[in-house]
Length: 331
Image (tube, rainbow, N blue to C red; front, side):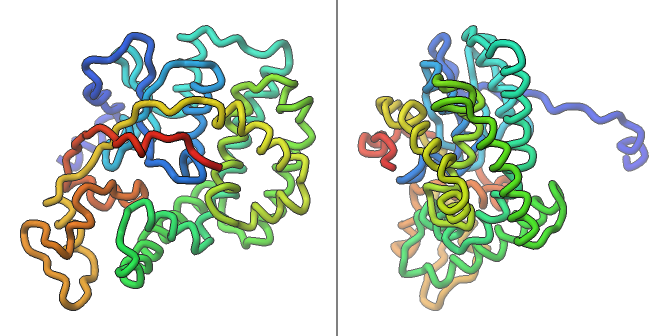
């Protein structure tokens, strides 16, 4: 079996089964992580696709995921007219093609694509390192899980230790292992490029474009959720970019009505299995079914960054989101 696998050419995974069987024609079903109160999403890749849909007035609905992933094992992915499309770059290209979104003229389109690639393939990893070095990042994850404050002393160190180590390894594997002061040099250089690119209210003039969706989403997801070193750099050294973030926020996020959303949730029994793998305080019962001590986990989405921990144990369930969950995100 080992030799057979060794000499077998790699094969791309089959596309997963379409979830939305009764889809509406030309409506994008966007599968992404859960919302934050002060920012649409902690993931710039998920936020980018939602912003694209908003600025180009593409009909869409959000499905919040816990364990479901794309063919590539990532979020976001979309379903459009019964087709599964993964990877935010591929999604962007398919949306532009299907909805006939015009490109920029001449060299501006080339500059737009180059700036977007720099943003997500270099600047993202720099910002990612600063974001995940903040204690507030893990507190945000803790709140997304919905765990009770009474057990914060127990579960938060676990989240920080297990998730933080994986994040650090992923980051250094992408751009190398640098000291924070060295990353700060990279950060300033990349932000300087963005600032020098700006040709009006937005990156390429007075009309918001796909490049703005990419750059704004990355910067907004590090500036709004909690304070970081990047926040200090923007406020002190790049006030022009900070003004741009606040200016881009309105067409990208603020002016649109709430949309239907769903959660993909875990069964209570599967949540109990997860709890069994964690340190348990004295007096907390761990029966086969959820007890009053564990009812706080009954219908709460597991934080996306912990989803890999239980992916092989769970199945996906769906339910409509309550009306109060569908309000606009408040900045």
